Image (cartoon, rainbow, N blue to C red; front, side):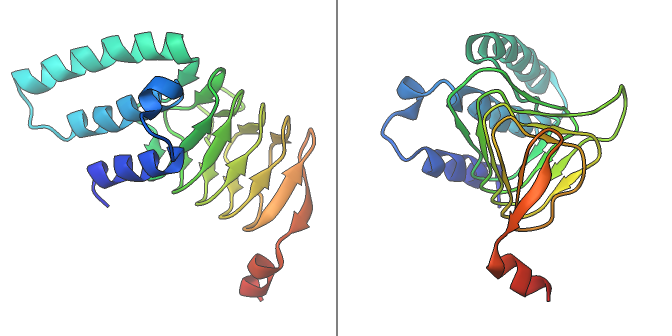
Length: 178
């Protein structure tokens, strides 16, 4: 999927007219996609100027929206952030396609220079959930609000609590594993 198709997939997840006017949470996603395109530009003055503009906009949008989404993170198409504020994504994090993040989510390390989470496709992460360290959250997972995920969550599972524990696994995911 090209980077423009990634952005189109992000927009489809917002399913409203003129999301830029209605949801601040789309601003950092737009800038993230733009930053990735800038990194793909040929070296030269144009790229340096675009990068300088990117970083200026990054700070303004980060401050206005409360969402930290650096262009070095790897994010699949169709990211949806519900509401804005206090969303922190580590610069080395990996987030799959069609994931949903709610306000207050942190995806980061447990220690300086430590490993970062990998989030699979179609994950749904509740408000104020923390996913920390070198964990893998599988495809189709649901992470409950205010959960602290410190260990892997298998495909299709639901994890809740602090520290998070698996409370359910969807049958279709369990059948596929058998």
